[in-house]
Amino acid sequence: MSSFHKQAGTCEIITTIERLAEVAEILSHQTEIAVDLEMDSLHHYREKVCLVQISTRHESWLIDPLALNSLSPLSAPLTNPEIVIVMHGSDYDIRSLHRDFGIEVSNLFDTMIAARFLGIAEFGLAALLKGRFGIELDKKYQKADWSKRPLSREMCAYAAADTSDLLPLYDQFRTELADVGRLGWLEEEGRLVCQARVSEKDGPLFLYCKGAGKLRGHSLAILEELLQMRDRQSELLDRPPFKVLSVETLLEVAENRPRSLYELSLYKGMTSGQLQRHGAGILSAVESGVATPEDRLPRFPRGGKKEIQERVKERLKNLKLWRERYCVELRLDPGVLAPNWLLEAIADTQCAAQDELDAIPGMREWQKRLYGAELARITALV
Image 1 (cartoon, rainbow, N blue to C red):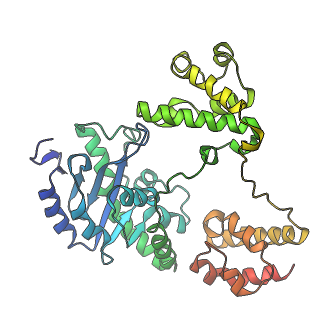
Image 2: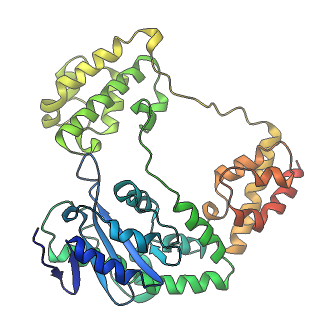
């Protein structure tokens, strides 16, 4: 990558640490900055941040991490608690900024969360920009491989559009949230999202496999062998695991235990190419799983939903009826106001004391203030 500053329309692509430091200095004098990331998780075994889009109220830049050894100059403006970092659907971007660059955002305003707190049903960025400003976002490059270089002019325009109009949206949402007394909700959620981190997978791979919970004994052992085989192949091929073999195929194999390539070829989703590349490995994984001694068979942790007592059932029913009425009154989605896990935790409390409700892990301060006393009263009725 050459060191001169390439242009994509009017949006500069930053490829040198010197220029990044200059831009970071400009950013340090802003009161709010719009930020977005592009990654390559759909195309590689280990995903990475491939592009950072940043906009002020007057300028936008595309920062190319693949051309830079470090993004350290960005740390100062992005971690400054006096500067609002505006993002849309920020959870995984916050995790990725920390994972790849050690950058910890401290003052976040997420426009997707804001939209949900305002009761907006269509809270995707494209729908919001179209509804508010008549701006049409092109989704053509949503699943593009952002690790490829050079980036086309069209890809650069697509990327820049994700932040160039985010600050006007922030202005509207901030005012509207303040008007309905919900700005504090947004600020609390922002503080919590800023603490999000990428967690490494720990323990057997079947723990992270949707559908594994229905398997037991040797079938679960086979599934673990298959997942380990797929993971090795994914790393070798530098492809995401789901693009090597689908989970549906692995579950079917684990349940039915094919003994030949012919049997395997009959499985839905098993292409001739997959059969040629992975058939022998799949059959070997099946053999290994079947041969697992009884005392070494894996077990899926079954926290075992205890039998819900009639009293708890009745509490939960009352809480959901309350939520239904309250959601209509506040014009909020039930999952935003009080998600099911929260109502279940409240229904399961031993008493209706306010301090016990306050101690429920994950319950927000705004929720406690808004309806904590009401929930304590409802819970006490049963």
